[in-house]
Length: 350
Image (cartoon, rainbow, N blue to C red; front, side, top):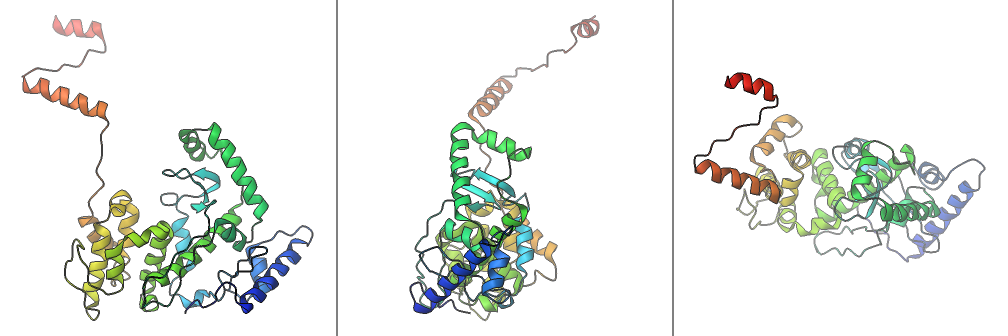
């Protein structure tokens, strides 16, 4: 399936205007919220989704159908909701590295629309990189509410430290700003975007197994545009020769399916991402194994056996203490632990 709808076409404008009118009609009904389900119900057959920005008229997810993929979106969403991975927080919280605002299962709240050109002349699929506002509206949520959440986040960020945020998340004392259902809607639309972009990364996405499609979509969800930096992985994925691929240095022959996927796995095993997020990476990398369905645990054990853990950097204070102790030991000094009960210590001496 190729995404051929381009911004600015007459058909796209007509669809967008009609969809936005229906959104407004749904919003006008007393006691009824604008929901992703209600917008889809009023505009498209089941499984189709359309996002509209007021005054822009650009459809983002037209023609998507879950029947066109080989795995269950619900199953992937269940994985991404796991607190051991992306997390599940119903209020805006800072990204641990960038401090950019996230919500739900890591949904970015302040991204601008980005150009992501298709550089592979053999892949007709385009990348979709809409703004947070467009994705928010595609999920059926109000733009004014997004602005309110961002303003509250900015105020809290000036008052709270990162540790305070983490403590509130851990203790579940951060006041919810969206519901479970709304967080699920945001996650679903983000997964659909990841599937679209997975097609743009992989020429033969439709020929992958369901588990492999799910693994690639999860990888795109987690990395976004940063996946472009995984040149060896993308070359191996598309059946091209791999240089500096780590565990496999030989060119890939497309007919040799096992060699191809061994090379795909090897490029990820040697990545910094795999070492930093070892548990998550083990599962994703194992899923590229064509025999994963027959023995999931066996496929994961193979990856665990070769995946190196991340380097642990000890603090300078801890390191200096160890160095000092080693120097004393090399001079034959003996260390004794102070007695916790002086009286008992005296009886032993006696």
